[in-house]
Image (tube, rainbow, N blue to C red; front, side, top):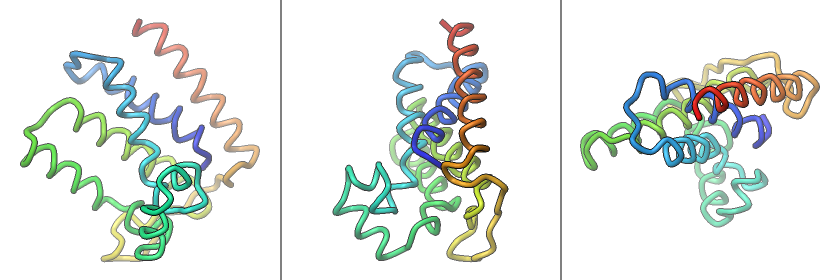
Length: 155
């Protein structure tokens, strides 16, 4: 999926979760969720995120490959452990989990899919959406409209 699709879907996930969380600063929460929704693609040097963290993305891509470890549940578990056991549970951790999970969810709709239990299993969940294809563009605009409606209701 394209960066913009991940971003608007991360925003949607963040907005939908506001109903269930006591968030002291909605703006910070949504920004963290949106940024976290882009994080898994730091394992691809040519991605827009990877270009911004080039040395790190180069190392990650060489070590793990794209859509392997960083597109599995294990980074989610690491984020959970970090925020729950080390930093104490907080809203920033919840926003990171929600954003990161939104990336994995929407990438599972992609032809390339994700291997949710990599490296334990290479079995992939694959979908029907081509990156940059017409279905993704339609999906992007539907999510964008949903974001706008929820933003108007939230603020």
